[in-house]
Image (cartoon, rainbow, N blue to C red; front, top):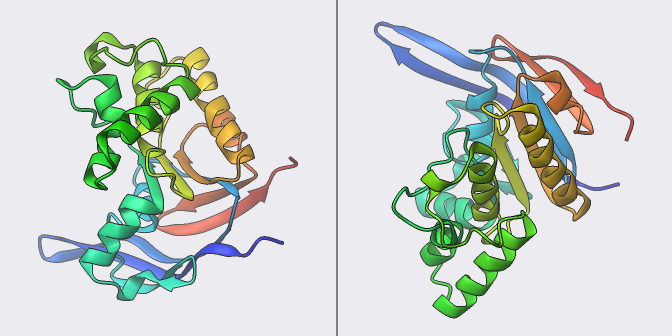
Length: 230
């Protein structure tokens, strides 16, 4: 049995809204096994994206304990958090955040630039990653010359640049047609087969069914879970 790579205990997150504190997450307990494919579902405003940002070390919980690969994240300083974001986690955002004036190749290589990987090595790896997501013929294109599904593939290649153990994706098929969405989910399925731990946020049931387990979030709390036969 794989050990838990992510452990959340009584995680709460509050935001100030005028004179009132808004509870985005209200006491979540969650374990994610190493190599698991997990989906978080819930309506808009349920807290699912906030929870994903906490797991991705992009946001800090107001209360509770968070362990990532046995390390207590809730006690780490910003330098260590940045190191975790660079090396352990690949994040795929709903809006891509690709550099519009940089080539597909440069966008895919960007995390390796921040990690000071030598130019020749990062170019070779970026090209190999782009080839693996079906963009080997698009490396010199700019993002605005790609359709939505292709931009998602660049974002996936970029997320894999530093060989992270964990892949997090926020609504990765939200703006795509059904064919493009299926192509993106097939890439996630292959990454899971390679041993990656994947956590994906979606509100689409057919997308969630690619995973092994679905956690349903409602009003900042886990409402119920489903285990899917795989």
